[in-house]
Amino acid sequence: MGNERRDFMKTAGSALVAGAVAFSPLQTIAQTGGQAAVPTGASAGELTKHELPKLPYAYDALEPHIDTQTMQLHHGKHHQAYVDGLNKAEAELAKARGTGDFSLIQHWSRLLAFNYGGHYLHSLFWRTMGPASSSGEPSGDLAAKIRRDFGSVELFKKQFSEAAAKVEGSGWALLHYRPADDRLIIAQAENQQKMAHWGATVLLGIDVWEHAYYLKYQNRRADYIAAWWQVVNWNEVAGNLKSAMARG
Ligand code: MN3
Image (tube, rainbow, N blue to C red; front, side):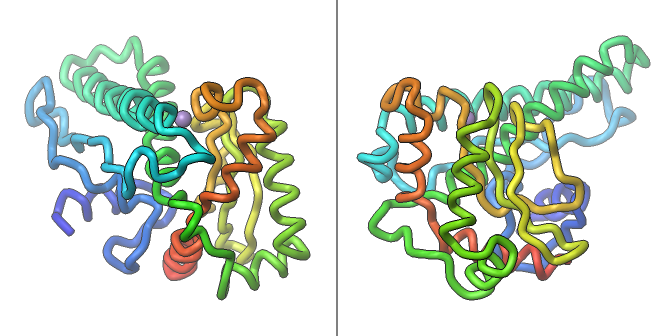
């Protein structure tokens, strides 16, 4: 991995240790284009130039569960907007450092959290889905911890589906690994960043913003959630757990 990726991962929070593991939720988003131009000179510090990750499969690969047009718009337009918003927020904060004018710091800090959340979660979202034919099932440590912490895979899926269905407005249901007590936790997140569980690593998430499903499912969010389970890439989720446990 390049220096810029290592440096980014070091500063990306949540106890990431650069290069320690093969899988990382940040694997995709850390594949960036190097440093962006800092608008106000070297004294304002360096910036990462964030870029939209390529999908690991074709836009139609998740059919019929997730339709091609939704994937094209969701990845190419919505995720791109979060990438652009993240680059913009970081550039504006650098500009403020350069000029000494921090009058909009609340605004740009809010947009930094929102757009970083969007970039992080969508990067994870694409990688933890795949064609239904290769979806698989929870296995190994992942299956053992699911059974230990939720009772069974069925109870885990039931709670996760309920969490996803009941997110107020736009947001996500997320499976986290919490290293402090070695537990799996199901959480809801609002927007892209609210209700975060500090220090825990996201292993799997479903986007329940309407842009994720409305073209095909309209208001039937529960139908979308049921279909989404068919395209979860369990191998990738198991890899995310393995890397999160290695980091501790
Ligand atoms: Mn989305």
